[in-house]
Length: 100
Image (cartoon, rainbow, N blue to C red; front, side, top):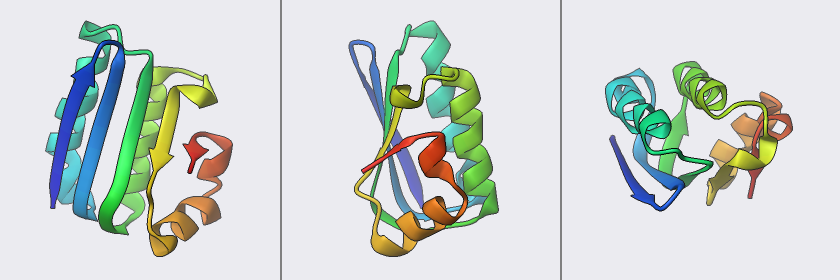
């Protein structure tokens, strides 16, 4: 498991590798804590190497949503593998985030 992030202007990119579960909480929290101090207006969560998500991962994505506000277009979840995307869709996260 690894969570890395980078900031380019007002855009934050978070990359999640391996299992996205509670063990990712500290690193994910550190990444989203940079939103306020850097005037971030868009966040991309790249899940191209994410193998697994659980309920705590869904909770972390909701924390991100709370940080970014109600603008659905402010958060994009990209490159999710079929199994991961299916979980996000079952949880109706397509209503909260842009899934692509």
